[in-house]
Image (tube, one colour):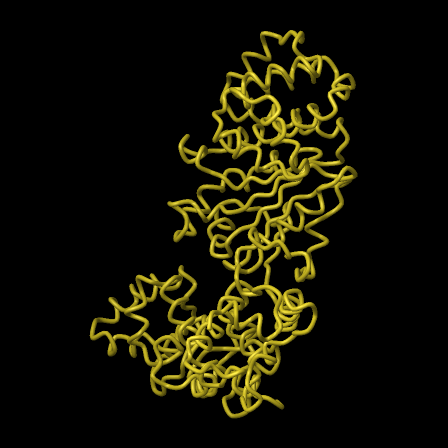
Length: 518
């Protein structure tokens, strides 16, 4: 039976597991769970402020961006919303602050033009200098675009919906010709641009590009918006940055650390960054004292609610727990287990659920409910897939490590290399987010040994010869003080989150937590 047929049979009206990219989810508003700081990030357009949001991949960054975009759509929108998520022109130009400012000027100019195309009479409220700014910006930043570049810029203008696209459809032909026609309609065709302004438009220095950016923001506010929001996303999705947090940080560093740009009157920047970029950016000028920095992390309750709301949205409210798909004889709470093993990622939670359903529909004479064995098999298959995707070049090494926590001495024995060689391995693993320091392990009669452990239990599940139940029971324990789940084989250790002593036997295992009736 196909996945779609199975889902329909059990009561779904659509596939709740079909998409894990927020931009493809047309029902996002039905199951979006805002994190506690969301309203702060959304902010008050009358007093715009810049935010930097760090989150793991699949952690909900783009979903938040989309909800901010949706708040900006409509005739009464208080802020002009522009999304900056295409960096090829910046990369091609060699990067730098001026290159970023130029791209921001481009999309902002296009937004102003699209607005004037809809209501050209508003141009009369602009001063002569502002009219010159709009005309030279239209010529310099938009008129020279090719069709593909223009369409990419149109996609960034969120507040105006289809108005920006309608501008192209209406005028057609070369973009420059459409701009010229719009200039005429808005009464800007006869504006005489000063020589000084023309020269400044040709200047590619940071001072010049910032001048135009600040002027265009002021013009947008004069046309009726309280503020301009620039939403910056997907910095880590270029060919050079997709697996390199430092490269991603370097790409955006000049923009996110330039306070004059970030504090442009009437503008707010909302940066949505991969959490692995945080250390590099903080070490290279990110000012937490001047820019609000937040780390997106979902609680167990929030993720559980998110999954429940998603299931309800695709079933007309009939299904609100993954457990409704699981056989009643199962000894674990499948819904809660998905939450814990998602490693804080809504995307991975949905993908893992789909993996389980996929395994179930592959069975001959498929039963009505998912068995414990199928639940385990689906989790194992997804764990292997996830580990390969995220840590592919290290997977062969990880598969040789029999435990969730380890010392350098133990690894030297496993890999049969020197401690120096093992140190180099671990130092390469840590920046990927796969491994972290867990303090030390007592070493009677000698100096304590540095202890390391995997950050994601799915890495352990992917390689372990033990059953998932055994892994949950022996390699994942809960800190009683902060409820952080630690992946380790130690008899006792200090919680890396709060520092409290965690003693196996006294602490709950993840199997205890997810056991039915626990």
